Length: 227
Image 1 (tube, rainbow, N blue to C red):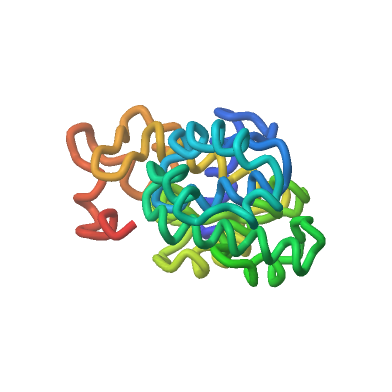
Image 2 (tube, rainbow, N blue to C red):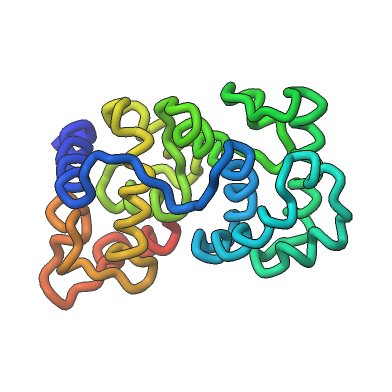
Protein backbone atom coordinates (compact mmCIF):
# COMPACT_ATOMS: atom_id res chain seq x y z
CA UNK A 1 0.00 0.00 0.00
CA UNK A 2 1.38 3.42 -0.95
CA UNK A 3 1.50 6.34 1.47
CA UNK A 4 -1.19 8.11 -0.53
CA UNK A 5 -3.44 5.07 -0.21
CA UNK A 6 -2.78 4.95 3.53
CA UNK A 7 -3.53 8.67 3.74
CA UNK A 8 -6.90 8.10 2.07
CA UNK A 9 -7.83 5.39 4.58
CA UNK A 10 -6.71 7.56 7.50
CA UNK A 11 -8.65 10.64 6.39
CA UNK A 12 -11.78 8.58 5.65
CA UNK A 13 -11.65 7.12 9.16
CA UNK A 14 -11.08 10.55 10.71
CA UNK A 15 -13.92 12.14 8.77
CA UNK A 16 -16.30 9.35 9.76
CA UNK A 17 -15.49 9.87 13.42
CA UNK A 18 -15.24 13.65 13.61
CA UNK A 19 -17.05 14.97 10.55
CA UNK A 20 -15.68 17.68 8.30
CA UNK A 21 -16.63 20.78 10.26
CA UNK A 22 -13.59 22.75 11.38
CA UNK A 23 -13.02 23.25 15.10
CA UNK A 24 -10.21 24.46 17.35
CA UNK A 25 -9.11 23.65 20.89
CA UNK A 26 -7.91 27.13 21.80
CA UNK A 27 -10.45 29.81 22.75
CA UNK A 28 -10.17 33.18 21.02
CA UNK A 29 -12.21 36.04 19.60
CA UNK A 30 -9.62 37.91 17.53
CA UNK A 31 -6.68 36.88 15.34
CA UNK A 32 -4.11 38.22 17.80
CA UNK A 33 -5.75 36.31 20.64
CA UNK A 34 -5.30 33.04 18.74
CA UNK A 35 -1.71 33.99 17.88
CA UNK A 36 -0.85 34.72 21.51
CA UNK A 37 -2.72 31.66 22.81
CA UNK A 38 -0.75 29.47 20.43
CA UNK A 39 2.52 30.98 21.63
CA UNK A 40 1.43 30.13 25.17
CA UNK A 41 0.52 26.56 24.18
CA UNK A 42 4.15 25.52 23.62
CA UNK A 43 4.90 22.71 26.09
CA UNK A 44 1.51 23.33 27.71
CA UNK A 45 -1.95 21.79 27.37
CA UNK A 46 -4.68 23.63 25.50
CA UNK A 47 -6.95 23.32 28.54
CA UNK A 48 -4.42 25.14 30.71
CA UNK A 49 -3.94 27.85 28.09
CA UNK A 50 -7.70 28.39 27.88
CA UNK A 51 -7.88 28.80 31.66
CA UNK A 52 -5.07 31.35 31.59
CA UNK A 53 -6.29 33.36 28.60
CA UNK A 54 -9.81 33.60 30.03
CA UNK A 55 -8.44 36.04 32.62
CA UNK A 56 -5.47 37.27 30.59
CA UNK A 57 -7.63 38.70 27.82
CA UNK A 58 -9.79 40.47 30.36
CA UNK A 59 -6.72 42.21 31.75
CA UNK A 60 -4.94 42.83 28.44
CA UNK A 61 -7.70 43.75 25.99
CA UNK A 62 -5.64 44.98 23.05
CA UNK A 63 -2.32 44.40 21.30
CA UNK A 64 -1.23 47.74 22.75
CA UNK A 65 -1.90 46.45 26.27
CA UNK A 66 0.51 43.56 25.69
CA UNK A 67 3.13 45.82 24.12
CA UNK A 68 2.98 48.14 27.13
CA UNK A 69 2.74 45.38 29.74
CA UNK A 70 5.12 45.25 32.69
CA UNK A 71 7.22 42.20 31.91
CA UNK A 72 7.47 40.88 35.47
CA UNK A 73 3.71 41.24 35.92
CA UNK A 74 3.02 39.50 32.63
CA UNK A 75 5.29 36.65 33.73
CA UNK A 76 3.15 36.17 36.82
CA UNK A 77 -0.03 36.27 34.76
CA UNK A 78 1.10 33.38 32.53
CA UNK A 79 3.23 31.52 35.08
CA UNK A 80 1.18 28.30 35.01
CA UNK A 81 1.75 27.78 31.25
CA UNK A 82 5.43 27.03 31.88
CA UNK A 83 8.51 28.69 30.36
CA UNK A 84 6.78 31.88 31.46
CA UNK A 85 9.82 34.17 31.26
CA UNK A 86 10.49 33.38 27.60
CA UNK A 87 6.79 33.39 26.72
CA UNK A 88 6.18 36.75 28.39
CA UNK A 89 9.16 38.23 26.58
CA UNK A 90 7.88 36.88 23.26
CA UNK A 91 4.30 38.07 23.83
CA UNK A 92 5.44 41.60 24.58
CA UNK A 93 7.92 41.67 21.68
CA UNK A 94 5.40 40.10 19.29
CA UNK A 95 2.79 42.70 20.23
CA UNK A 96 5.29 45.49 19.62
CA UNK A 97 6.27 44.00 16.25
CA UNK A 98 2.61 43.78 15.20
CA UNK A 99 2.19 47.46 16.02
CA UNK A 100 5.44 48.55 14.37
CA UNK A 101 5.16 46.51 11.19
CA UNK A 102 1.51 45.71 10.60
CA UNK A 103 -0.50 48.44 12.34
CA UNK A 104 -1.52 45.95 15.02
CA UNK A 105 -2.97 43.45 12.53
CA UNK A 106 -1.89 39.80 12.25
CA UNK A 107 -0.38 39.04 8.82
CA UNK A 108 -1.29 35.94 6.83
CA UNK A 109 2.00 35.38 5.00
CA UNK A 110 4.01 32.48 6.43
CA UNK A 111 7.33 34.36 6.22
CA UNK A 112 5.89 37.46 7.87
CA UNK A 113 4.34 35.39 10.64
CA UNK A 114 7.50 33.42 11.36
CA UNK A 115 9.48 36.67 11.52
CA UNK A 116 7.51 37.63 14.65
CA UNK A 117 9.07 36.88 18.07
CA UNK A 118 8.00 33.50 19.42
CA UNK A 119 6.35 32.38 16.18
CA UNK A 120 7.53 29.24 14.38
CA UNK A 121 5.90 27.30 11.56
CA UNK A 122 3.54 25.48 13.93
CA UNK A 123 2.14 28.70 15.38
CA UNK A 124 2.04 30.39 11.99
CA UNK A 125 0.10 27.51 10.45
CA UNK A 126 -2.43 27.49 13.31
CA UNK A 127 -3.16 31.13 12.54
CA UNK A 128 -3.20 30.68 8.77
CA UNK A 129 -5.57 27.73 8.93
CA UNK A 130 -7.99 29.00 11.55
CA UNK A 131 -8.02 32.74 10.86
CA UNK A 132 -7.30 33.09 7.16
CA UNK A 133 -8.62 29.68 6.06
CA UNK A 134 -5.39 28.96 4.24
CA UNK A 135 -4.89 25.21 4.01
CA UNK A 136 -2.07 24.50 6.47
CA UNK A 137 -0.66 21.52 8.34
CA UNK A 138 0.27 21.97 11.98
CA UNK A 139 2.66 19.40 13.42
CA UNK A 140 2.53 19.08 17.18
CA UNK A 141 3.47 16.02 19.24
CA UNK A 142 0.10 14.32 18.62
CA UNK A 143 0.09 14.94 14.87
CA UNK A 144 3.66 13.67 14.58
CA UNK A 145 2.97 10.52 16.62
CA UNK A 146 -0.26 9.63 14.80
CA UNK A 147 1.27 10.34 11.39
CA UNK A 148 4.28 8.14 12.09
CA UNK A 149 2.27 5.26 13.54
CA UNK A 150 -0.11 5.24 10.59
CA UNK A 151 2.81 5.16 8.16
CA UNK A 152 2.20 8.60 6.65
CA UNK A 153 5.76 9.67 7.45
CA UNK A 154 8.99 8.28 8.86
CA UNK A 155 10.37 11.69 9.74
CA UNK A 156 10.84 13.04 13.25
CA UNK A 157 11.57 16.69 12.46
CA UNK A 158 8.24 18.61 12.53
CA UNK A 159 8.98 20.59 9.36
CA UNK A 160 9.86 17.43 7.45
CA UNK A 161 6.71 15.75 8.76
CA UNK A 162 4.71 18.78 7.60
CA UNK A 163 6.07 18.58 4.07
CA UNK A 164 5.59 14.80 3.94
CA UNK A 165 1.93 15.21 4.86
CA UNK A 166 1.46 18.00 2.32
CA UNK A 167 2.48 15.58 -0.41
CA UNK A 168 -0.08 12.88 0.41
CA UNK A 169 -3.05 14.51 2.13
CA UNK A 170 -5.74 16.26 0.06
CA UNK A 171 -5.20 19.99 0.42
CA UNK A 172 -8.74 20.54 1.67
CA UNK A 173 -7.98 18.10 4.50
CA UNK A 174 -4.81 19.78 5.76
CA UNK A 175 -6.24 22.10 8.43
CA UNK A 176 -8.88 19.59 9.48
CA UNK A 177 -6.31 16.80 9.82
CA UNK A 178 -4.54 18.83 12.48
CA UNK A 179 -7.40 18.85 14.96
CA UNK A 180 -8.55 15.34 14.07
CA UNK A 181 -5.10 13.83 14.66
CA UNK A 182 -4.81 15.75 17.93
CA UNK A 183 -8.14 14.28 19.01
CA UNK A 184 -6.89 10.76 18.24
CA UNK A 185 -3.65 11.45 20.10
CA UNK A 186 -5.49 12.69 23.16
CA UNK A 187 -8.15 9.96 23.18
CA UNK A 188 -6.58 6.73 21.94
CA UNK A 189 -3.04 7.11 20.65
CA UNK A 190 -1.73 8.36 23.98
CA UNK A 191 2.05 8.33 24.26
CA UNK A 192 3.21 5.44 26.44
CA UNK A 193 -0.29 4.11 27.09
CA UNK A 194 -2.11 3.65 23.77
CA UNK A 195 -5.62 2.20 23.57
CA UNK A 196 -5.02 0.36 20.31
CA UNK A 197 -7.96 -2.04 20.51
CA UNK A 198 -10.47 0.85 20.64
CA UNK A 199 -8.68 3.30 18.33
CA UNK A 200 -10.57 4.46 15.24
CA UNK A 201 -7.32 4.23 13.25
CA UNK A 202 -6.58 0.66 14.35
CA UNK A 203 -6.95 -0.74 10.83
CA UNK A 204 -4.77 2.01 9.36
CA UNK A 205 -2.05 1.85 11.99
CA UNK A 206 1.29 0.10 11.57
CA UNK A 207 1.06 -1.17 15.16
CA UNK A 208 -2.58 -0.92 16.18
CA UNK A 209 -3.57 -4.13 14.40
CA UNK A 210 -1.29 -6.14 16.70
CA UNK A 211 -2.91 -9.07 18.54
CA UNK A 212 -4.65 -8.25 21.79
CA UNK A 213 -2.16 -7.77 24.59
CA UNK A 214 0.70 -6.72 22.32
CA UNK A 215 1.72 -3.15 23.04
CA UNK A 216 1.98 -0.63 20.23
CA UNK A 217 5.70 -0.07 20.68
CA UNK A 218 6.77 -3.71 20.45
CA UNK A 219 6.83 -4.10 16.70
CA UNK A 220 8.96 -1.06 16.05
CA UNK A 221 11.39 -1.13 18.91
CA UNK A 222 11.99 2.37 20.20
CA UNK A 223 10.38 4.14 17.28
CA UNK A 224 7.18 5.02 19.17
CA UNK A 225 9.12 6.52 22.04
CA UNK A 226 10.82 8.92 19.66
CA UNK A 227 7.49 9.98 18.20
